[in-house]
Length: 330
Image (cartoon, rainbow, N blue to C red; front, top):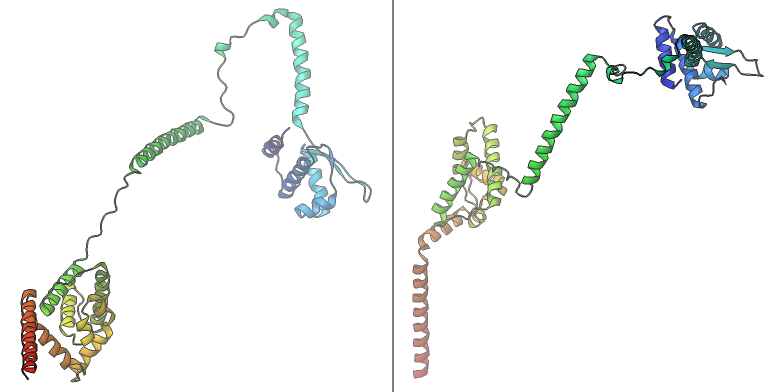
């Protein structure tokens, strides 16, 4: 008998007789010990080892092995204290069945041969032998297994198709969809560029760095408006940006007018606006205003600036020549 045969024997026997938990523990422990010893049957096993392994007392052990023997699962021989350990034999019913069946079959066959020796020469019609159904699997279970196998087959085919499609697309992977620009950021950029054009009569070169700084600047404006319980819808934030740009008077920021610098100097600009509201003026406000006025009045086309420069150089050259001629006459 194999390990599984002994286990099946236990459960088959349990259908007719009941086993306590301790009886089951003892049987399966002895079965494990027999397996460890390479199926040496019978085998010795000290009581102390069993007691320590499965946690039962010696009287309980003696009672359980007596019950297992009475139920036909094992035979044991008691040991002698400090001299000999108990010996256990796990009943192998297959040997008993085989021996009994062989005796009965041989006896019946001999009796039949004596009556009709021709039975040894009768052929068997192999075509009419019904197929042997698989053991332990009923029709419902078999149907369920077939359905699962079919589902797995379909899934494998789908996976193969998908792998082929991915392999064909590996050379030209699909490009990621571009993110749609934020409407608020687009309007804020337009507002800033118009303000820059009006202030400096020149177009502003917009970079990726400016886009990130504009997003940060808009967040700061929203934060300020939330603190004052003002609406933070797109139009409200754009109005706040326009007011901020119109209120910049710091000389350095005006000379280095960019989204990045305005974003980095946001707190200073807000402080200057608040100071101006409170009647205070910064020391460079007048200077900045003068610079802006001079820049606006002197601005013109490149051709006009060059013409003025050439005219100035001409006058300067005439003055130098007149001075050198006067010195020569003396």
